[in-house]
Image (cartoon, rainbow, N blue to C red; front, side, top):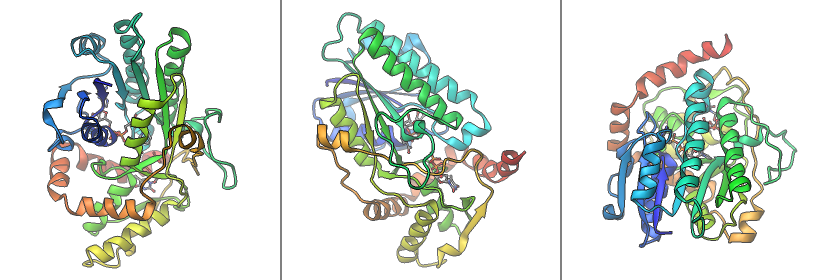
Amino acid sequence: MKNVLVTGGAGFIGANFVRYLLRVDPQARIVNLDALTYAGSLENLRGLPDESRHTFVQGDICDAPLVERLLVEHDIDTIVHFAAESHVDRSILGPAPFIQTNVVGAFTLLEAARLAWKGKFEGRRFHHVSTDEVFGSLTPDAPPFNESTPYAPRSPYSASKAASDHLARAYFHTYGLPVTLTNCSNNYGPYQFPEKLIPLMILNALESKPLPVYGDGQQIRDWLYVEDHCEAIDLVLRGGRPGETYNIGGGNQPCNLEIVRQICTLLDELRPEGSPHARLITHVPDRPGHDRRYAMDTHKIEAELGWRPRHNLTSGLRATVEWYLSHPEWVKAIRAQNDYQIWLEKNYTKREEFSE
Ligand code: NAD
Ligand code: TYD
């Protein structure tokens, strides 16, 4: 791995991955292609471990000539594809950009790689980053998802990611493009845009705003600290077998209410003013089609590549709360530059749109 094209590298996981790769691989040069949608920000890329090995390009993954040019000009041998519309709530209110970026965008990248690398697939890799949500929703006692679980997506977001996964696998089987896939559970950690559960709750609690828990709050997710996800992707890039999929997850099963309560307890300790923060917990109408439970079987990546998460939920949540408390300038900049306030307002009024 020498010249790496990272797509969506100004978003939450992409930016963490850029940092991770620059740190662990002194040879890697990164071209970071990101459209800087509401979810992406150059604030996420401040103070990189080595700026000289990072080139940022603002652009759309659906722009085929641009992608083809970047692959050739930078002699790209590895593509790590993160760029996506990633928020389920937004996909319910407006699915069109999800189909465009997640499906057409993935297709554009795969096709550009096939053409640029034609006849020279040796030593190349196209890694597609996906989600556990493609597998659908589990009942409380069902076994976790494994790599052979049939796809059953239930939101426009997960359906669009499922479509891109199918395309990635099709390019391996049809053209021999050296594709690997990872399906990962919910991530949390530094630089996560504060519309997602964990940062939203931290920042709302700090301002004594309501903490909106959807429905009964008993929905279960498997949570993974973002750096553990980055390490897993890096291992798959180096040792994963082309054509294979690897499930990644944190091996925990808290319900949403439990997560919110843990955040409140951490804030009671670290920012006691306004305690107890749990008084702010407010049940709001549920998300339509809300998946009840996700769980991941990660035996394959553990056995084949020796991956294991380094953080558990307790240490990861503490690190995350501490990061948000110690980066008020990042929070301020993100809120100022994006449609954050507009979204927050919508986030409350959309409850009515959901139930229409
Ligand atoms: P994010 O929303 O924080 O970041 C997405 C990035 O993609 C942003 O920087 C945005 O500007 C960029 N982008 C969007 N459309 C683009 C386009 N057309 N062209 C170029 N760039 C574009 O998302 P994230 O949470 O960092 O997720 C990254 C990837 O990981 C996604 O593919 C997502 O499906 C997957 N994933 C996320 C999670 C999670 O919990 N966040 C879990 C599993 C998998
Ligand atoms: P989210 O971070 O949107 O991730 P995903 O839907 O992809 O799992 O939400 C995580 C869980 O938290 C999900 O079950 C929905 C729930 N949730 C709330 O209860 N309140 C909120 O304000 C948000 C954003 C999410």
